[in-house]
Image (cartoon, rainbow, N blue to C red; front, side, top):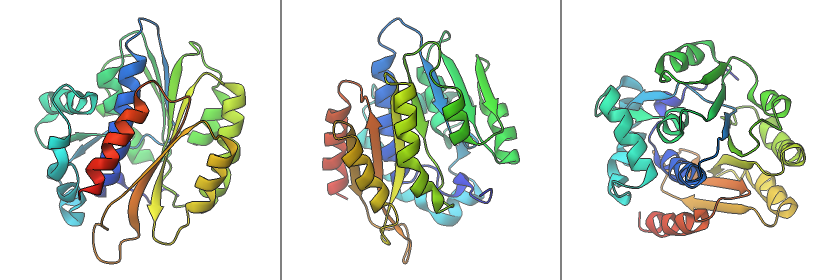
Length: 258
């Protein structure tokens, strides 16, 4: 459960998919001059370096953001967030979702980030800018239930497990249903891997049946290396902000061209 290290995978094609939609949702939500509550259940370390040993070992970033950065114009929120992080940490720096959120949220928005891995928590606390943010070393899914509904009620929660524990797939549908009952106005965004062994499929189907009005979006891409099981990326969003479907449609066309 504590063995997953996202540094090996940061900036891969799944991250590009997730972060493009995540940043687009935040961009829309921050257009109103009203405060937001922002949560992450599996925050990771927040800041990664694409010239680091881990990234170079897998080559996933080279096949990911390094290859497709031109998909995003400079005014796209994903590109804007990356530019903020590069200005602060260098051209090889890559923001995880906490730093993307920090780049796009305002000073009066609230951030709550959960992460279990002690080393990742320590790195996350160092990476986050000086602004109001809670970094919690605790189970993110338990945090999600205990801290909703938040105040302010407008907001977004990103649920992004590693799926190392097989029961994650079994828990997610019921968890999201409970969250939605408690926080029916919240934007609840789930990322999941599209796997050759179809381990994700029952979960994704259950969510679509349970929430037919949600945004469900998957893209496919070549495996990062021979035998690698991840062949795509999925995003499921309750209460998707206006325009998010358009961004998903644009990404479908981009990934189809790989």
